[in-house]
Length: 432
Ligand code: EPZ
Image (cartoon, rainbow, N blue to C red):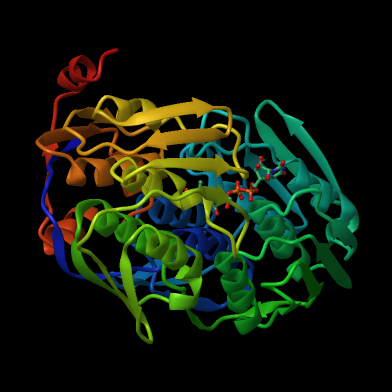
């Protein structure tokens, strides 16, 4: 078991290269199974969720070959349909995109219900299943598996109005509809950059998808997809996480290889908090010299403030002057990390989907346990900004979504190292 030792209290200076977007990669890799012929995916982040999904493709008979550390060639020509087991699905929520992709390719799928980040509340998939049923699929959930099969072996296009603009449902329905017969219309669709990236990937392989990035997506089913090359967009949330780290620690960092437009809501909010941000073509120069100022945050679907940035900005707000209010309007109870912050001296009260933060002068290092991916990233930021030494356990959550986090933080002067700790020691150090 790995843990991170972080010595906090140092400002950050230098450059960080932003990698490919995790949430685009985890949709595009399953989509590749619908492509006949070799398909090369570039700007693939080296994170454990990607390894896991490529492993699922291999188990189903795909040929997977890394061309370089960030480019992978996937050939699913001789793929067979098979069960995606619980052991894979519980470790990565995006494994449920195998449902849409297998339905698209074979008209049938058998996939374990997903795991992934547990925020402490429920993560329903009713909108995914509603979409599949509208496309003529018979869906049965039994013993932890979703078993789905289209009458006659091929899905039929339909109009689907999502009750919630769900990212996952939009992606899954888009996948299933790509090779369906006729036109599918998704209304109240999610508009996140990774939804658009998936549509661009599929279109570049021969799909006919219009309107991604708006709330109405039209998918005209095609007979097949052909191979090609596609490069994944930069990770909006990875970039935002390092922006929040500079806000919390102070210093000046250039974040390279990103899409500034995707960062607009973070740029606006951090500017309000006293962080200076200079925008260039594909980079942002982020600096914080003066004090941090309080702000209110309300998470919303894109282009609003992303829920996946809520814990990281909370870490910075713990050190801002005044009282900040965070409302998470996407997830009900994504504040489990605040108990760890309190042990560092933060003043936070949580009530349902609301957190009230009274800024303090300093946080102090503590033993911290990551409870999900973004919570783990937020603890890392708090530890980097705190006085003294922190130990973070359960870092496998962080490594699900952040490539080379240690190298990137060290590259800007942060003090962090990974140590292997025996499990009994971890059990003692995190008890209670
Ligand atoms: C995606 O999850 C992301 N995951 C999450 O990021 C992110 O927090 C979330 O979108 C919101 O932006 C991936 O892209 C792999 P949703 P997803 O379906 O698709 C409700 C991270 O940290 N809902 O958009 O599961 C749901 O309860 C991860 O990278 C239904 O009611 O989220 C929630 O309140 C964690 N029924 C809202 O919609 C459904 O069938 C949005 O969920 C589906 C969702």
